[in-house]
Image (cartoon, rainbow, N blue to C red; front, side):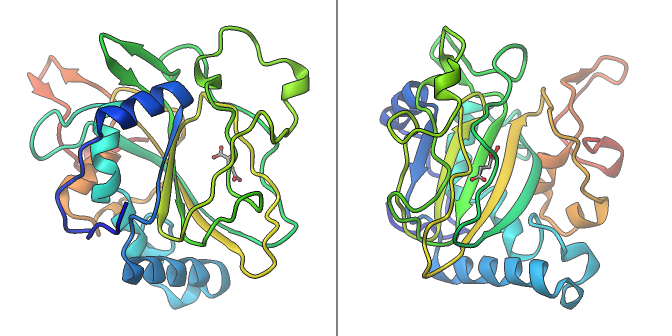
Length: 268
Ligand SMILES: O=C(O)CCC(=O)C(=O)O
């Protein structure tokens, strides 16, 4: 895949990608960010970690400044519409961004041990009538090249719909069970949090892993507390703001559907 301008129309998810995502629980879109956006996001992460006071207060977030472009980057919007929810109206997304964190990982550092998100209830992965409901969905922007066997977030493919509890022996990292990837900087990994996954040790001594981990859901479900000040959302264009709206479907009292963002209708 080649780089996609942040101003381009959303790229629809293909039937092949749907099959792959349903089968494995994840999808890697390599090299979708333009070099200028990769650089701007890396610089933002550097400042967030090393000199936050150089940024305005409302930009000290991994969903602000240049990194807010990632929230609804055209490379992921088509996928999120298919695996979470279609837009309920032209000016609102059906998906919500729940949370975000920035990562700078040095050689020898690891993340969380193998784990998975919800596997039952409204946040769990399922498919009905050919429509995917990915529930809690992670979108990882890799801003550094990931080399095979040297890092990334390996995933136990298929575990989002396993019919048996994952045996203890597979709750440890094992390269034969957890699928790794390699990708150039500016790639994005989208996976169902119902999959077992792992913050494997970063083994590349030539560069740190710089990544942004955003979490998504439908506007009808929530897992993470948002913790994002309204001032940060105020910096975004109107449709992007709808990714931070409250979690509900319809207000019978006012005959109103939940397809708008205001500070009174912000996810808690
Ligand atoms: O550190 C990592 O690579 C994985 C992060 C993680 O476990 C998660 O997104 O839930």
